[in-house]
Length: 336
Ligand code: 5GP
Ligand code: MN
Image 1 (cartoon, rainbow, N blue to C red):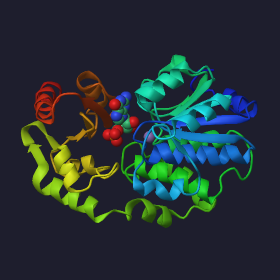
Image 2: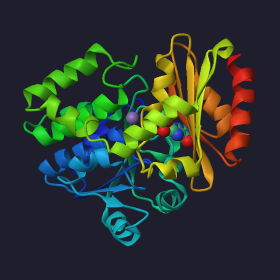
Image 3: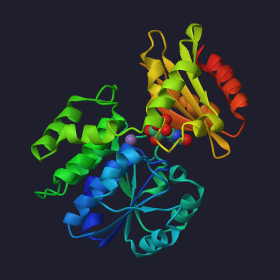
Image 4: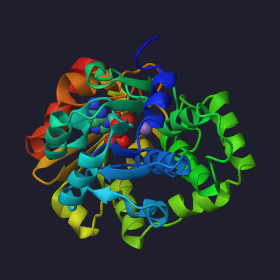
């Protein structure tokens, strides 16, 4: 059986372990946190001691999950994180394809650690040699959907309680852009239907995630759309570039620009969108596209990143102005 579709080996590994360590990517999003806490909660019901360690801060709109199930943050709780890893007999890598996605310091720790690692993920080109087994499917809407499948493999009743269902739904609803992206399939809706049967309140989760904005966040969105949107109709492309000063003006917090990159795509004739943000000495970039336009390869080729066909990220160490110019030049070359 293919190594990264080997759930029986994964189930066996869980049964043989008492302490389990779950990791996810840097700047964790709804799918990262939702998948991690759902898996934690299910494995605990199997009697396991489980620790979730995220590399760094997560956005406020995910607080409602973390209030119910604890997690550690590597950048501020390194010692506790290291202790948990030392005790662990099994490591899960959720929602990332390569260990470098956890950030430099945490990556060094994980690469040095010999605990067997399992991957559950939906990003292209997983770093296969690192994992002993996994559940990897680039067609899955979200890692949360794969975690749901994985939990079914234990053939045990009651592993998904209403809270676990909420975490899985949070991952699915955020990664599918509320069920509108192409990755949304009949299977995605079937999984959600099952979660509803298990006690999921979709309205409550939706409200927790989407109706919990700060006024600053909405004002930043207004500023971005009113003043910062640059459209290139002939290239069917738009971009948004935000300096540190601009972000500070709106008291920017991690997650405040989540989803903003999708707005330009709602303009008729725009098929590629990019947001560039000055953040801690580097420029973080997000790319989105429609149809068969491949921003994954674009991000890999020009901006040291990657992701999916229609949603990818990357970075630049140049200034914001230089990055914008380099983006315009490379976009012309690649998409033009
Ligand atoms: P976002 O733009 O929301 O940060 O990321 C879009 C998608 O691309 C996500 O699935 C994310 O995991 C992936 N991604 C973002 N940044 C990077 C990166 O630097 N490298 C790789 N390989 N994937 C990334
Ligand atoms: Mn995901």
